[in-house]
Every structure is written in C-alpha cells, then in structure tokens.
Amino acid sequence: MSEFKIREVIGKLAKSRHIFVSEGDFQFELMKAISSEYPDAIVTAEYCYPYERDDKVGNHTDIIVQIADKVIPIELKYKVKFPKNSERVFDNRKVYLPDSKGYNSNCHAFFLDISKTQRMIACCGKCEEGYCLFLTNESSYWNPAKLARQCREFLLCEGIRIATEYAYHDKNNRRVVGDLVTSKTRYKPITLLYPCSFHWEKYPSNDTFRLLICEVRQP
Image (cartoon, rainbow, N blue to C red; front, side, top):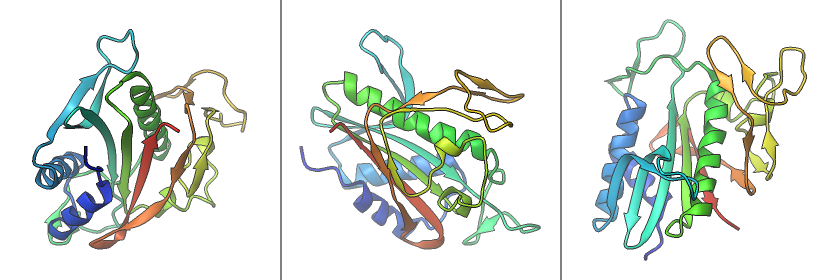
C-alpha cells in the first residue's frame, strides 16, 4: 500500500475550495479529493465499524478509506465564528452553519473522536493509522490561554496529550469523577490509549482558518 498523505489531499482540496458551507460539505469535498488522489480507494461516509472485539455494531466514522487491505478512519469537525452583525458569507459563498457555539462540547467531541480512532486501530487488524481533523476560524480553539473553562483538560491548544483519563471540572473548579451532566449534554470521561500531538496549521487557501490534523497511529 502506498503511503496515505492527508496533507497533500487537503492541499489540493484547498485550491478549489477556500471555504465550506457546512461540515457535511467539508466531509463530501474531502471524500471527493481522496477519491481523486487515490482512484483505487473505496471511500465511504458514516461507516459503522466495530470498535471493540465483541462489538457487533460499533460507532459511525465520518470517513473510511480502504486502500487494498488497509482501512484508514477519518473524523472531522468544522466550526465557524462569524463577525458580529456580519452576513454569513465567506469568499462570496453563503455559509449555513450556526455561529460557532458549544466550545465545551466541541472540544470534548474531538477528544472522543481520537479515543474512538485509537480503539478502532487497537481492535482492527486492517487499520494502522487514522486522522482526526478540526477546521475552524475561531482562535479560542488554538489559543485558549485566557479562557477558564470546565473543559480545561480537553483544550485543543498546541502540545502533546498523554495517555490518561480526561475529565470535566464543575463550576466550583473540582474535577468530576464520572459523568458531568448539564441541561444539554452528558460529558463522559475519555481515556486516550496512547499519546497524540496537536499542531495547528493555516488552511492553505484561507488565512483566517486553521486546521488541526491529529495523526492517530499506535506506537
């Protein structure tokens, strides 16, 4: 199997798409770009793949790429922050995403994507690598230093995330053991099986957006 080069795929995608109108649009266009770069690959959206050896159902993965006998899972997030009182237009394209909200849940969901991908690699003999992507123009995701949030263990700033359990903090700054339940969301602790690295890059054709590519590969 030839090496799967996700950055080259995104670089070519960026030449034709400077912005996406929704997360689904990003997912669809990325799938097209992968199929164009790897014409022999089978590229599937929302594929339900077992994540445990005794799990017959599994969880949905945003994109599954199958090249020869290898399986590559890709999870993605796309969050947009609109300037106050502005039209929802970027690059002359109307964007239909709601304004970027749910910071806590979005960070938690990205860690969950990594955990799912690690579990899939651990139990699937055909899977050696995976990728979790986060594309946004909201700077608080890559520069959250001034933010004191309940999701402090789930921040997406630059650096290494060690293999351990990550949990939420309550409003009194106490680490929650078990689930933290709010009016809208249940935040479960998440365990990473092995370390991973976070590094933000500018999206090649739009300087207002940055992209986090977390490569998931069992050491």
